[in-house]
Image (cartoon, rainbow, N blue to C red):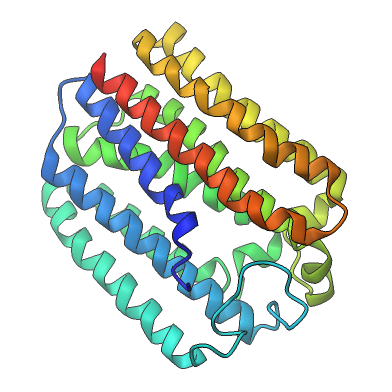
Length: 285
């Protein structure tokens, strides 16, 4: 429950796309790609553990919480046990990183250390990113640009421009998961002093951000096809965009925040379908 399996698509999809793009360019390497996938999943789980723990101790998670159960706030697991779990999982991610650094050198060391640091700093530390409206930017960069580009880099030791473009698409849709989550929590986050971007933008602004993120995700395959000669098969990723209609419709029509809870999983499905179709389309090309 603390690992939040529905959110793990944000870790799997960009790595799949990075591997698919590497296959398209003839530089696919199975072991580094698999290690990148394992590392990304571990960092995502570690981040979720950190959020569960730090949101509770900072007072962000209270009995008024509307979203899925947080194990620390609900008293299911002791806070210190969740914190130890965070340390163990992020430590495991760093062990995977040792192999990737041996394969790809110091750039991966920098990326790995920054990823682990931000996993904790997202809700922990003296300047928690999520509490200062920087959570969306963190997700866009680390679960988009860095996840796709870094996966490509550990296989090819290069970071081509179209890897960044692909990262923009995955980053936008992964951020949409967070936006749905934060839209649901605007009222409770405001009372807790958690100044997420959703709190700062308000309901109307957050709805506009959600639409813009889905639109950006839709533009990326078309841009890749036109600018970088991605194969036509990569455009099958656009088949995922209609899946965004229910989350967007609910975001504009909901009357109670609880109605947005199922939309978290629905948005995560958009990410995984988009990512797998884009990865497959690139690899087949």
